[in-house]
Image (cartoon, rainbow, N blue to C red; front, side, top):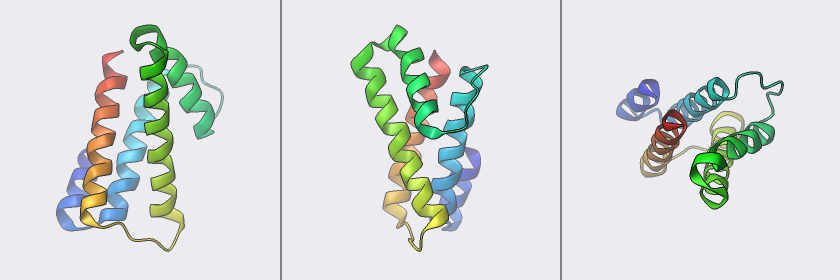
Length: 106
């Protein structure tokens, strides 16, 4: 996440979005030891199942939605001719930080 914050500071907004996503993904993968897939929808589903034990189904589904929306933003940042504005990148980094807190608290 530190890289995402540094990218925000220097104005590399697409890089910030991508780095924020990957910090969340790595945290999710570390919690989901033994996961045999690299597909984001499968990771999101497994994360929601894990979190539902402590957060309940509704809250874990929101986390799943947030993870997948961060993934969609990362695809825009890395694979499309799209440039994030500062405000949007900052909002996505804040959301990623929130997801990290949730993942690390389980």
